[in-house]
Image 1 (cartoon, rainbow, N blue to C red):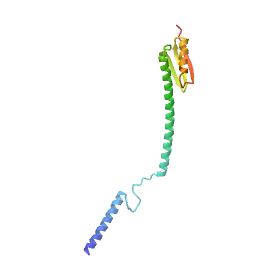
Image 2: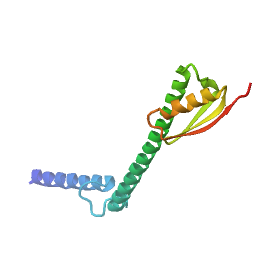
Image 3: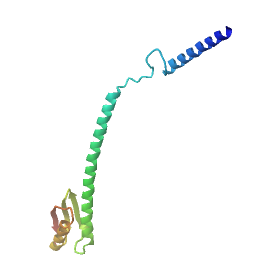
Image 4: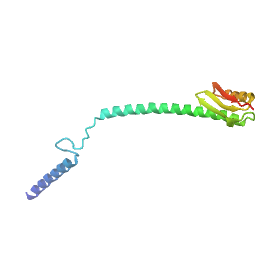
Length: 141
């Protein structure tokens, strides 16, 4: 009889310890709501996260488009300046090349009308250029 009493008492103590541990840690079988509930509306957070991801993707696309445009403008400018530098009849150091989209503006001072015409022709013959604005001045000797 003593043995059965001790086993029952030991079982009660073990169950009480498990309940006490779970109560203080917030795990398992407790008599109330879990203590570590954050109170966050998961569905609202998920929806807001999806909105933010969509917005970030759109802004990323816009930035990529702007960057692509800037790179293509820079590439056009570089192509034209390279052509002028390799041409013996054009003094590329005195000519400024500005690109906006596919429109190229040439400014600066040239030595002759021939040099001016050659610079404009080199710019017009470059792939991707739709219009050349000539603001070159002929330097009078």
